[in-house]
Length: 199
Image (cartoon, rainbow, N blue to C red; front, side, top):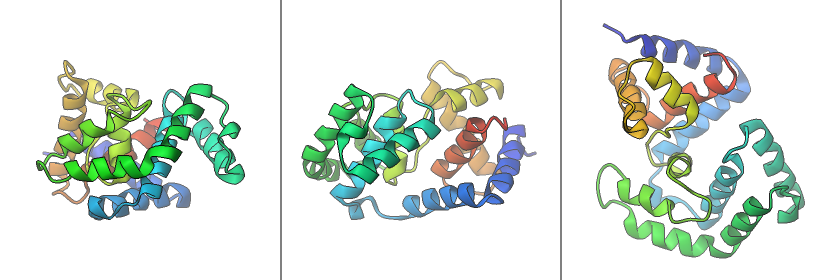
């Protein structure tokens, strides 16, 4: 029997893929999750780090505008929040070092927990944003953001540990669809549908 959240996921996947902008977003995540983590570059790590820092506590659409200003000008002064600007400037300086340290952790276990824990040491990356950054650099995981926590709670998952509850929901969806999608893809589909207020 297919779980109700799987039905919701499949409907949202179909709807999002019919819109070019969101279909491209889903395809990007699929592509990232299929690449070996060892292949990422310091520049790519920095870009993903900076974007996740901007998204922290900001609506994604606003963070994207700030990101576009930063990329267009090449100047961190374009970033309106002083703490985010300072963190991103640290990324400019330390991305090579961060990548070297990250690659030391790669492959320590199959759940990628060591890599994810290392990300927690970067400026302005915390217990939720580390999963966002991990997914964006190609580690297959889900992030316990407010949208996915709400969905998992409404679906009846144990939420004593929100990360485990959200992950259990996404793993159940993954099983229902015969592993046709990675956890990170399930995450981004459900998150984007919530971001657009479709669910």
